[in-house]
Image 1 (cartoon, rainbow, N blue to C red):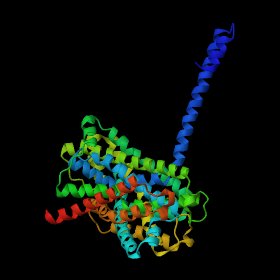
Image 2 (image 1 turned 45 degrees about the vertical axis):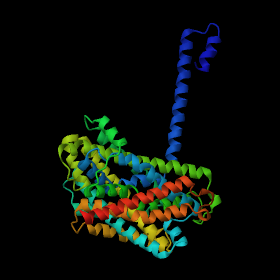
Image 3 (image 1 turned 90 degrees about the horizontal axis):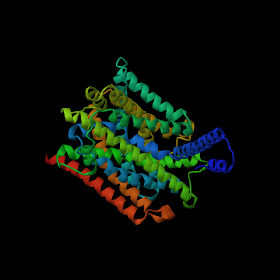
Image 4 (image 1 turned 90 degrees about the vertical axis):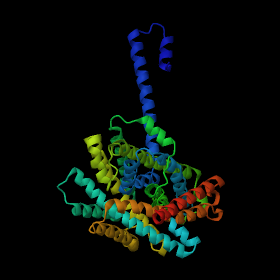
Length: 460
């Protein structure tokens, strides 16, 4: 009972209508208070989210969509367990990257350059640039095809050029504060995949959850390649570099005018907020993976459609079985995630190259202050644009760029674990023994997956 009600009960002779009205008012005030409190909690949570959310969302780019669609169409629900399995793995690695950025005030490449042989860094950076540029080209093409699903009369190359130009303009001519907000809100487009799946009728949730919990694997060449592609598109090198550099950008945006931060400047609150941001972003990323595999497994696989050649074909194939609503939501997801991923791919490659060679870098800088940094973004995006003139098979470009990420990840993962486990570099924010152990386990797993893929291509 509310206090106002207790008070009125003690007032002798209070009229019944007055009592009823006052009780109603007191309850209304209490409801409003609780609603406001919940809204404030949600608002505070939203403000806490940042680089972790956008990094997790960028992970579900058209390359990821194609990989997950292929997984569901070829094997149904069999590999659904990968969504839950990879979630803590990618969150642990991304948290290491974020802590490195928070504590050192430098990006990942800058830290590797300072503490390890430069030839290691140059190899990693070259591979990253190659993989990211391939991915950019595939993503630009996928976005153009996604628009054509809704507006078929628009020209493919005109759309590719338009998306490339829009991406470049966004990175070069907007302030980092506005740019970060754009990426953050754009991350919500991922929810469209959840709605697209839930719109499918007669989903067998018992079978879905059983496969999501119990691992199942067939050691065939095709499945090994696909599993490596899934691992490569979830635990991706470009996410490592982007996450670390974005933490530095956020610190500068928050008022720290120098990137040369010190270990003692990193507070427990900052680390706590970073951890919430990271795990929220990675959870959203893997939740979307779960629903895309579910959608394609429930529709395409069950109807014998196992050869998906692109993410937009997956959307088209869903239409007869899932309806127009799922089809449109899937198409919108391709466009939205591409708009989010292309700047992240180009930006992470530019951070890595700029830090490797000691150039001025950062999205907080203007074009004239960081010519080389923005030049790499322009070159990478332009090459990606040109790739679409070559007529490459989109699914092969997407899948094998994900596989390439899976093959080069172990090299960079070794360096990430070594840096974040180094007390001289990280101070009190160094990895504990459990986190270090998990980091090495993840590195070993990515190495085994990559080697198995290479061997399978020669043996079979």
